[in-house]
Image (cartoon, rainbow, N blue to C red; front, side, top):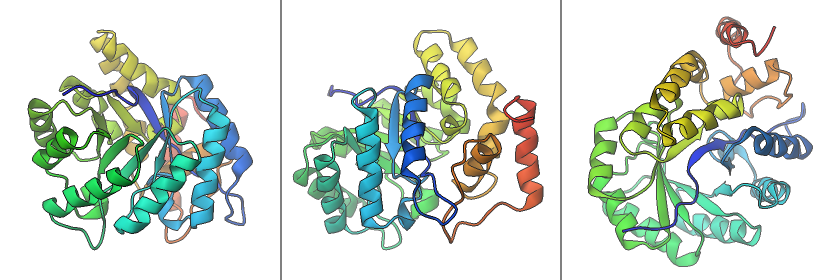
Length: 296
């Protein structure tokens, strides 16, 4: 089965910039959108895990989507995180994101209450019936406690017209390889330290945290790979591996916001229960940034 691909390459899972009082800094969000367009980012994912979606009020969530879509102005796709562990709420969010002009939706699996594989199929079918936007399934079992089995992802891609991809934030490359072997579903790497391995087995890109810090790098890793410059892609990937891993030495997006703030990007802190890195871990991250010339 062949369907249109929403994007290939580097989709940045955008942070939600905050002011000192914890409110969203929408002006900074607009600046980030412009910067990513200039840096070659291939798509923006707004209000995902990295965007602290669980602590955004509904009006904030929708305003962040509106601002990102308006600022992008069609220059690159904007994909809205609208997943929920409540199917009815997920449907409402998806409909709102469509009205705001989102190009696609990123749908995390139900978390905490979870469900069976049959329940996953029913959940995504219900959402797909409520919106005609392209849907990217989001598998992140370390966060949700629920794994999309390869056969389930293949079934959803085969039977639901608007399912156009899967963000695979799982280190199980064998399962991903099996999925790609039995399905044409486009797979996006969800772990920056596995980008090239995922591309090597047929992935179509990455939905990246690293790209918040070095967007041109993550774009180039993918572009080089697609152009057949696999050695250059691998070497660039390995060169930045320490930072890719350093951005996950605490709960995402705590480290990436720490890095961006040290680089002078002024994206603010995270909302509780996310908590700042301890000073020793923050200094180790700063050392990596200095090593790459990103800070003095």
